[in-house]
Length: 230
Image 1 (cartoon, one colour):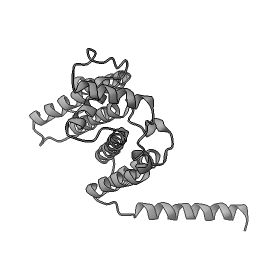
Image 2 (image 1 turned 60 degrees about the vertical axis):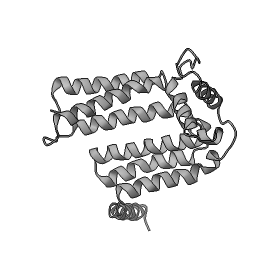
Image 3 (image 1 turned 45 degrees about the vertical axis):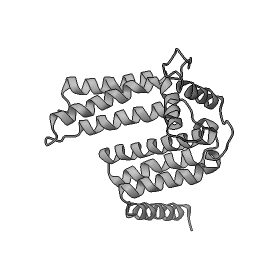
């Protein structure tokens, strides 16, 4: 067979594959959530069950979390440098609930926060594109966070909570920006408030989240002032 024939055959196979993928039925949102959480749990289980420190920041924030149980005032009881108090406060809350302290607990928290990030990306994409595109869009995230061997993405880092907060803020903003005349003004105001609250809280988890939250907040202000959405 000539090279031209091989190319045409490859193109036909590629088109057939795309058609098959496009005909794949996407499960419900609840099923997608179950698949995301279960997949990441299985893929990250060896790391989750590792009782040792994966990064010095884990011990740093874990010590702060225990100190906050005695004195919860930031920058008086501890100095987190660029790491905000929210990361350690979350550890304090979990410890208050009676969970056994240790690095396994931190790795489980990291897994839960990453899983929530993936689901927020899915829910956001569902409102911007189709459910099928949203499902395929988050698949690389699941594969990356599940198969990575870099401890930067496996340990309870100071970036994982601020990233989630930034995603929450953007998700609320996307809902607010939808053209829904039937939605009450009070609900619209609540969505904007939640967006600002999440974006404003993100730097309290990591100082470097400030510029990202600032850009997202500026986007929301521009949308309100220009009246491009409403």
